[in-house]
Image 1 (spheres, rainbow, N blue to C red):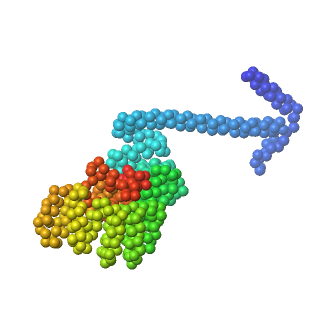
Image 2 (image 1 turned 90 degrees about the horizontal axis):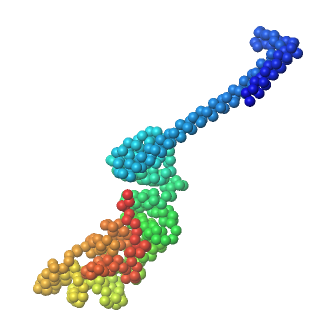
Image 3 (image 1 turned 30 degrees about the horizontal axis):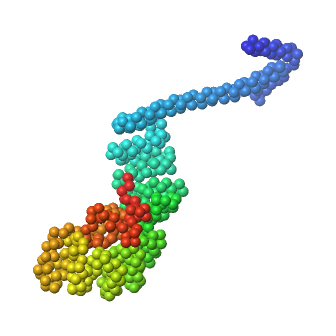
Length: 467
């Protein structure tokens, strides 16, 4: 091949020499306005040919040079990625061994070599937060978000940094920014955001988030639980409106909750309260009566009793008690509630007669005997009162009248949400007597209509305790 090229070169030189012989004429070539030079025509031809060939060689040479530079850069990048992969492997090994200081050191080296390694930045920030370096964790996770703002893991990690640092508003702002975006529909992130809003008692905003979250699941247990939370948040927004005196908005919220779950007791009780505040007392009584007919929960009778005494209308609650007792004459809890009402209305003889009838039928708590003793004192029967109080001392004492069906927490006031386990629709009136230990939970959990708090509809998330 080389000999062939040399042969071609020699023949080309011979040809050029012959061209000089065959073309002796010269031309005047001006290379400046006042400068010129005479040269053979063949020389001009050869120069033009040489310049063209040189330009072609230059262009191809630059392409080869650029390709070589690119290849060199790719080789360097490949070596760096190999080094990063080796470091990343060592990081994972150290983390698996719980060698956090060594892992931190390796991660620092890794992100210095590869500044946009999102996984390394995420773990490095998390380790700094675990070590108490909250400002460092925030800085690292912010840096990671520069490379990928939509990575949900980075959003949650940075939010946790803010939460640990006590920067709740920054935490909320971060989730709000994510939620307002089209991509902001990750159910785990929305669940955390919802819980944060619930802890902050930002009910309207929590309801907005939960409305999206509850639609994110197909029919099944998870959707049922999310819908149950949605009902609870509708109730809370209604309570907020009610506290501000916005009874019309409150009623709409409570009716919205009941439309989804007609058996949601707190919404029906609060709806009656809103109606009472508007002066619609008869309608409020009808709302509570309808609720009791649906699930026979004593909380409805308790609210009706309070409303009747406040509005000076005891005949209505007495008549309703008569009807309820006629339907369930063996219901000890219902009869005890009726006896308490007799005592509050100063129907002492009727109250004593009913309590004496009930005394041996159940294992009553001390509250039963305190009421009975007070009634005896009103009749000036001190010996019977003393005996009742003595029995009360030996009975189990739980002065709180209300109980959570789920966690059994006792509380002196009724509320739509248990303050202990944070579940909605779980607080009811305690029957006043002790149920055998093996059936206590089942008895209190179960409504008279057969529904149970252990069903998915009632078993809502433990809000406010998400990590």
